[in-house]
Amino acid sequence: MIWQNFLSEALCQPCAYKTYFVSRKLNQMFPAHTIIEGSDYDFKIEEYARDGQCFIVEESGIYTQTETEYDSTDKSLTDKIRHGWLNVLWRGKLIDVVLLSTSDARSFWIIAEDKTVAADFLRAVCEWCAEVRGEILVFEQGYWQKDKHLFQAIKDASFDDLVLPADFKHELQTDLAQFFAARKMYERMRAPWKRGVLFIGSPGNGKTQTIKALINSLARPCLYVKSFKARFESDHTTMREVFARARASAPCLLIFEDLDSLVTDRNRSFFLNELDGFAENTGVVVIASTNHPEKLDSSILDRPSRFDRKFYFELPAHAERFAYLKKWSAQLDREAQLSDEAADTCAHATQGFSFAYLKEATLSAVMQWINTRHNATMDDIMRERIKVLRAAMTKAKPKTTKKKSEVEEDDDEQVFSEVI
Image 1 (cartoon, rainbow, N blue to C red):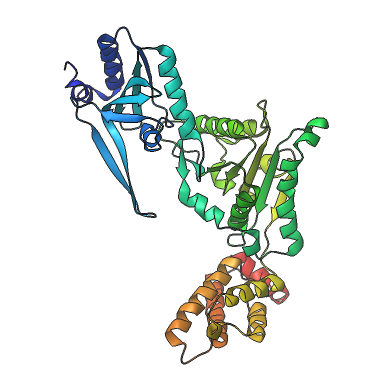
Image 2: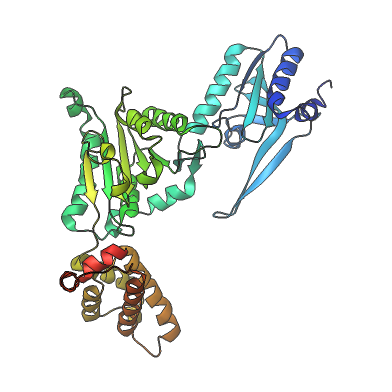
């Protein structure tokens, strides 16, 4: 065959010339055929074939290089072709697909006798691969990835597991549910059907778990943005891609966790333009969170049309700390459970603790109980662990010079909220 050394010759070309070399060669080899080329991340033909949507056979005259990736979470192996020439049978049509990987992308060439067949095949593969089935779309390093493990973590999240003030939890549960149910009303009132929600609070007080519970309860397509940074693209380009995908997926949820780290002085104006500029974000609900609202520009923090609702996640009060400890204790073996009296005492003793600190206290208490259960009760162990954590928090607190009157006015919650 005249193309037996085709890929070898292509890979020997200078990096900037590789794809041009392949394109020119294929057009010389198949002058009467239609050739479509691209480097779309959604063209995952291996996944498409594994689902039985088409059948592929490697061209025997050309060596196909395949990489096998190991997923440590579910211990699965997945093959991905780096370089290869595939013979594809799709809906009774024979198609050739050439794959060639460079340092930043994998390019493809679809070769078919009919232009319509080539275009329909490309569209079918990309549309199938773009669909979200038991995954969450995550944007990182300039492109979208499907994360089935994050999806499972979200499926396991529930408002029943969240320890928050009852009225606050009810507002969180109903606000966006009512929004999605009121589309016709918004349209009748000629009001933009879009929403912006901002979660504000120090780390460890339930923002992330609440976002997961919301995604699970609302059952809408979800897009999660880890970073706008990409190796070969500007923040402006990636922002445009993120919002374009959200508009195409609407009605959907668009998540920006730690918004203060995503939006900078350099990209803020472009972000705001995508958020509420000329392009309509109909059906797009933006949920953002921040540990540091002081780092957010007032154009984001204070303008109502951008984030209509702000939910403040405060340090848990005594009632929430007591409920957390009781909920945790109920999951333990009976002999390891806290008494009601100890739970109340510990709830008082943990004033100023975030949920993250409470979790640290309970985990360390379980570990110590396993090692010393014959010599101490969980009540005693829990009290001791709280003392240790509080001492560590006090030691970690930045030293400041205060007047005596100011020191006397400080209560535990004020002191430890500064640390956390």
